Image (cartoon, rainbow, N blue to C red; front, side):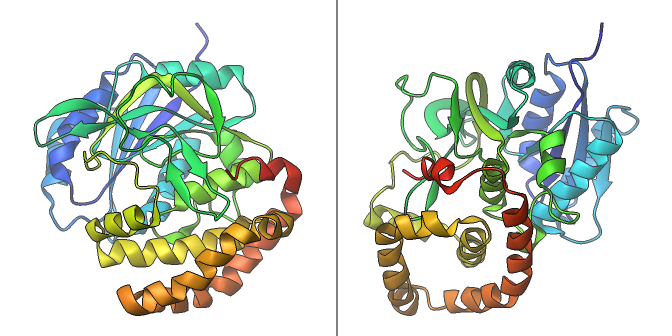
Length: 341
């Protein structure tokens, strides 16, 4: 029987060995047969995860273990895995966090739908939060795809909400979370800039949003497919976090490292992808954020001024990438406008 299309699952690991057993077990138990695994350790200081992988999987022809000599960051390690997947003749690739647990038919169901939609660049299933403290799944949603607001804030749809059946239909979405997406190799090749699929200037954080935005600009589709189910070990607290006060409160759980990169990459992403007519149409929503942000940084998180300087240093390179995108985009500003809610 002809292959349905090889998928390579790339697991990027950094210092979270406790998640590996559950994640790997759920991947090797997939019903989709034409599946290989590439495990990339990004120079974890704790080597026990790498030791576990060698002890369990050395000699397995369908699993390759890579130990990077330095921490390349998420984006560069993902690109490393994608290039290896292409070398193996893959049609699809999934970039996976180690704190993901898949149901057995996750890839079977997603690839079946993607094969029927030739313009589907990416897809993700319904992802719930997993309570690793009590080792049990929950009915709290982690992501049902990405939602973009007119002020250019992008969030995981439904995150923190108990599933009551609201997200039960296949949908096109603004984008897919980087937790456990499936990407079509052909689409990645179409939107890559120079030698990068994920933007390596981002290092980590928001690179999934940036790629999703670029797919839309090039006329591809991002799908949410709820019949495919997975679980993610992100924090299990409920709450929508939609108001300004909720957002500020939720930032208390983030490290300075996370905040600095997220702030820098948000600026880079918008500068790189936004169309001028869309920007001016939504300016009434964007302007308050532009005005209030400097005051917030100065009085609450002054170290973020360093991120702004880092953004300015990266800006010339980002503008060159923007020029490539604007030259090759396939959609109009009117077509993009519908994605900003």
